[in-house]
Image 1 (cartoon, rainbow, N blue to C red):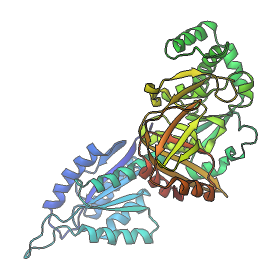
Image 2 (image 1 turned 90 degrees about the vertical axis):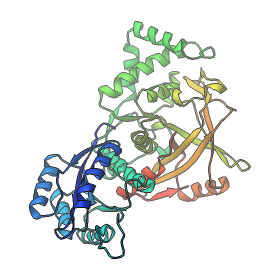
Image 3 (image 1 turned 30 degrees about the vertical axis):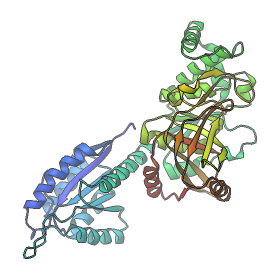
Image 4 (image 1 turned 180 degrees about the vertical axis):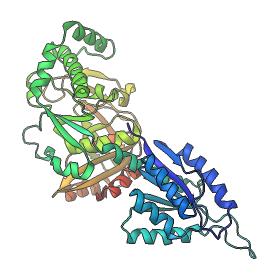
Length: 448
């Protein structure tokens, strides 16, 4: 992600409570947050927040540093005034973090009472309609760390989606109604804006490239992949298209794109499958078949993982093994290829009009996802699985994924839900983080 999440950190206490434990939490939890919250920039308020003077200084510090999220740790019991004051003045979501009691002695007092405090403060914030989250437990607990990582990752993605530019190279292929989209709903939901470049600009850029650059790129391709099956002229078209899109996407400020890859591109023997795969490994994401909604899932997955995604169809199930087969025309990034099964750069596997990677994809944990607009309301469809070693048994790029849901039940759920046919698959389990993002964006989640 390009922009770090600015997190304001504060530890609170009311005046009547002993200070030894709050001071300890100010040091130790502050150190933990500074080192263990990936993708964040921490702004630690240097003293305990107890009085109205402390609160005013903390608000000024957070405001000056433009924090996006406030992490409030209870050093000990704190009245509603601190949390509500921060919410009113900073207008930022607050995580109310209540560590466990550290001392239990029959004849001794409570030293924190943080859980009760978080419930009390949270109730007040609810009445104020102030966004907040309650986390209970110590920094050493895996569950707690996972909750905090998921929350901060979700807020970081949402911050990076604001002002994100989605580029369109053409619209959608003929008769692919499910690849239509509503950019107003997307902008309202995700904060993403759209710009468009006609395919003629792509073709003109391809034609205008100096022969020396095209020739050098052809040599690089020939030295990297087996291209012996490519028809005459396809290698040159691949090189020209690769160089053109690599130039156009960043020059036009596109953070991600979708392309109308047929019929026009195929008619010119420039179907872009292998080109899209190569660009994905270089940080230039482009969804094929003009599918914007699949691209939305790919954007979020890439922000969470830093890895390329595979926009794909689900084409087969195996009831005995309880696996599904993800396949597409050959647009998988080379970093996803399982080279042990062999990789070739060939013609398009269906219409013989461009370049495609024919290969199996590597094993590992995967998350398949798609955002789908149904009646103006986005839904997030999610499927967790494990990609298993796969032997390619048809042209194109493919992988078999073992899932927990019975595969026949999965097929019925897909049909009943109205989900479209494309998924974005990333080789990492990011499902819980995507659920956290969807919750913050008020998007219902359908776990398949």
